[in-house]
Image 1 (cartoon, rainbow, N blue to C red):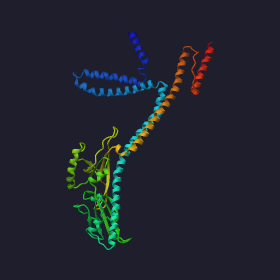
Image 2 (cartoon, rainbow, N blue to C red):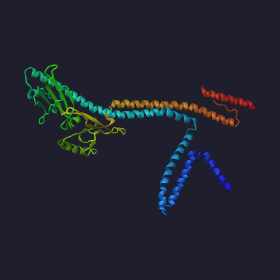
Image 3 (cartoon, rainbow, N blue to C red):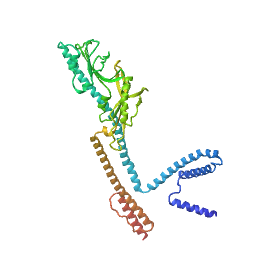
Image 4 (cartoon, one colour):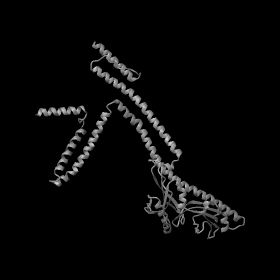
Length: 442
């Protein structure tokens, strides 16, 4: 009986060894032992679940631990077995080597390029918003300087500064319908202003002693303001003429900046009146967009919770499956109009857009062309690598088949030589060896 069981076990072991399933390392044996112990404890837990619930519950942790350990060990053993099976042939080894040397670096390069493009998309969106604001401020500064010099010329010719002269100096272009310009001559306390009806004037703070251009916070409202100061004479410190141009930084202005870029929401300080006036606009917009059905809020770097003042534009539709949404929060620095102190995070602009909007069609075609060139290079490299691999592996296969003939005492077999490289020299040497052995046997 014992000998029969031993013969059966040896036969099973021999069969498993022939199929490559017999454990050859400690990892395989450890996986089998852990799996057997896990199954044993699971069986005990299942049998004692009614008779002794406490014992069954105490074994749950061990069963889970042994199951995870068995899975890890089996995975390691499976990877080793698969590697030994796949890499037994020289051709597979060469292909794997080529993949690690050639294909993986190209893949990583493509991934890095996509990540870089995604990061650049956010930076480009920030650049678009800030550059539009800067360009608009520069345009206002140039117009304000022209008005100041025009008023100075009128005053020097014997005229006087009043609202009528300021109104004639004000351009009649459409963009000036929202702008308000105020001028102070010498040390007069009250300015002369010209602008939209019903818009109150603003003060000239003490820090305005020279040219100024920035986004300001005046009584919890945002404005784009530029100032031009003309001295009475060169080198004099007495102020002669101050001209300040102001335009509200509101939803209408941001609508122009947004354009086709996407949705731009501005978070910042707002007075109760501004909040009540912005609420109906938010409610109307919430009926148009299901994604923004309620007033949103963000936490600033200073820890304060700021409500959404207004937003403009809408998120463009996706052009393809990879055209995902990009959300970028841009701190908007500004100046306190009362004190002149800069506020690093006075407001926050949240831009929601897509890469297809940021990158023009020309850029898309360039990137697509580069991708095609990369794909062609990889395909050509694979073809060349496959051909070189085939020349090497075919020579090795011929040598392997020749050794089988030698093992059967067939010394008349010769390897066909079709090249002139080192493998051909090895084949000629093998043929010469078999010829010598055949002569010795004869």
